[in-house]
Image 1 (cartoon, rainbow, N blue to C red):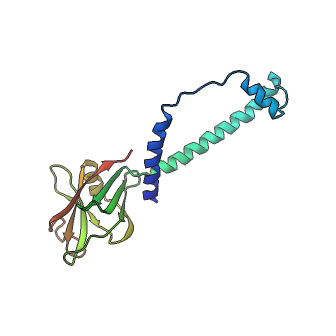
Image 2 (tube, helix red, strand yellow):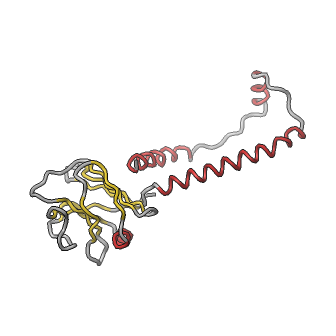
Image 3 (tube, rainbow, N blue to C red):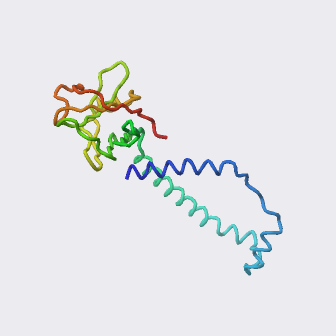
Length: 192
């Protein structure tokens, strides 16, 4: 689902820009009475009748706003705060990574598994500048994986602009640092 949410946000951001250049227009004064006459609307209500409906209208607006805020809050917690796409030189996407900073989760999605040159596991690393790489764990061979982040991983991701992938022995690096050659490097971008 995080991948679908990201794609929806992608299109929302692009299509919303189209509406910014549209200027609101006020229709001529004769348009609404003509519409009301064609639809056989009753004659205009007195100001007293309108005032009686005001509390009901205000209540409906208040409830709608409260529900919209609850909905928006639930969407925000499920949105990634950072994303990365790890791709081969051919341009094929291999893995997609999403960091959910609000809930301290990491989402990994295997798009296409590269061919293995040796028996081992692909491991992903955060690369904070001026500090040692921090393992984010083994990459999934297929499907999607959601993993909780440790405080060390969160801190490394908060300061990293890049991620790296290495081939490590089965189960991951035995030393806690990369032991294999760096196979892929990808930028870690903040998600808006």
